[in-house]
Image (cartoon, rainbow, N blue to C red; front, side, top):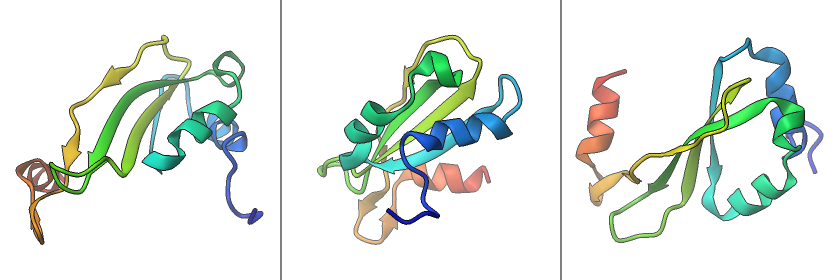
Length: 106
């Protein structure tokens, strides 16, 4: 493993040191790696980070999700909200209405 990469075990611990109480941290992970990532995480009670929001991302409406977006919050109550799947394209090279709405709000 590259020493500059964070492992699943050190990732949450590293974020814990830089976040203030009740602040959030959002990240994306390849959907294929999600099971391995969550299995290797330090126990939640030890790191004080709780996963609050999860959203699957897929390229097209008829394809499988390829990414998972996760929001974690420091010292938060244990609950997780699952958002609707985000579809990136409605046609080849044409963003979906959901993605256009996100870009318009930046």
